[in-house]
Length: 460
Image 1: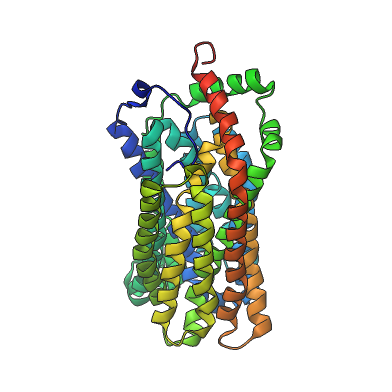
Image 2 (image 1 turned 90 degrees about the vertical axis):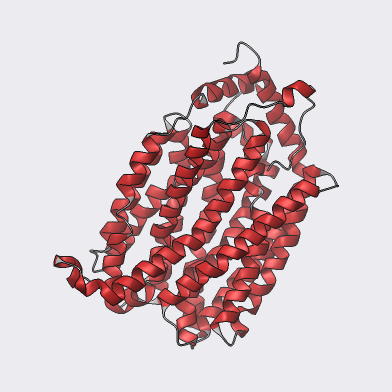
């Protein structure tokens, strides 16, 4: 939902033709692909305990697999893949990505060394790197005007619920295979449950490749070409570097806030399934299922609060999102800081629920903000850059938490490290998003000016 000022347009221009069924079908497929990616991305956290015991890994090595392997290399690959997505068929780029991360997830099942696992997780990261930039770049091509806000919210909510569903699917698959995997035929019955789980969660890849290939994405290339021509005529240069220099303050504040937000989220999602079994008599699969059950309702609540704020906001809508984000991110810091003091696993789940509700109330408006400040011909690259600046610190945080856990020591060392890293990250996100509100108007005005020029004959 757009949080920026809208240009004055004639009343007749605000009448929009409803998006066709094919557009909503595309959103449904993209949601399915996103959930599939979450399962493959989170599965290492779910099987971390038996994987560590089987291969003799340390917490730092686990952090490297889940942070350095997944997040850092996703950040490295994100912008080049987004560059390709701005120039070629986005369906093709996404299909290649699905194939890469599916094969890499399956390859993890056959590794016997830390080095082999690290290489396989790099494959997962590279395959998934283009997913976010492509999805958020495609939605404005599918939905006109105000309908884009609704589509953004639907996809964001479904994707966040997909995080919970992904954890639940991962935990349930691992739990079932741990109990019944020996009954499977052939070599599957002889595999360790964690290895069989990695193999099973990679199987839906070909199905999603086929579904993405059927999507109807019209006019995206024409819109990009027209946008580039309009920027060249109004600013004498349509390149990303010129755009970024002119809007450096806006991009820096927004993207850095998203980076800090990802640190806060990752600190909990990556390590809590490992931290709680060290304190309480509970297994990692059960923690993952419970965590998914806690995140689901909290996500609904957070996005619902965001939607209500957007609908009924009475102040300046141009600064609504920064102010909402600052408040919500501060609220999310409180339960994160309280995690080391829990005396039962349900208390940790309750705190995570509050954290997610507050964090997502703010985060749900961020994609619309990035779309609003992005010209069509640079849209995927903007989201690719956002991924870079988000995933680099997100990738380092699991490694830092693993190191802090070993430095603190004891059964509570890991959960204390989560709070030490996560709570300040939420506060930093609050300050950055509050600081950004003064820069939006100029960037949006520039993009809207060029977009108006692109809509005139001669630029298409």
